[in-house]
Length: 69
Ligand SMILES: [Zn+2]
Image (cartoon, rainbow, N blue to C red):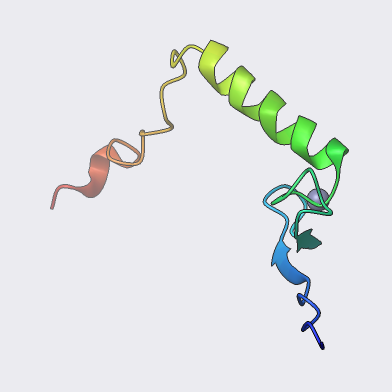
């Protein structure tokens, strides 16, 4: 019996963009490592705790008051 070897699929790691083995052998998939997984989880956590108080730099409209002809 010749069972085909399951080809280890490689996907880009969401954190570092590096090759990550998307297989049961990689418990951190789709991340390439535990570190990248933790970084991603941390990013999510800080996003949740961050308050959207910062106003976007939107002064381009009033950048040049002499624009009126
Ligand atoms: Zn990674």
